[in-house]
Length: 171
Image (cartoon, rainbow, N blue to C red):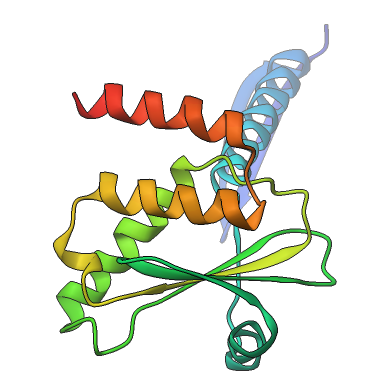
């Protein structure tokens, strides 16, 4: 072990800290590990990449496969990026800003609960309809699940187990 004095020079102030080098090295490595772990957890949460550009939305509307239900419309089209991207829209037909934001929140939470195959290289666009902000999240989830199964972006057996988990959580 090496006894040392560490000086912290900060804008003309000098602070001296007594201690051994091993302690300071171990504590700095611990902080680095904790920061990496926090970043890894954030990346796990941020599972979806977003579709942002208007041209990408229009491409999905024109060339993508559409699936229609009472609460939303799902467009699926292949992309060249190698990962799945999600886009959620709610037009002014849905209602005022509060209703549009509620519709987007319901759709986002439903997509988060679905076990979407993220290895596929597709763009998924979900368009809220006028009924979306007025229904419960479970209704949006079940309809999105059915449309995603038809589109082939989730597995049927995974969807069944997820439905059971959501119904148990609601009860």
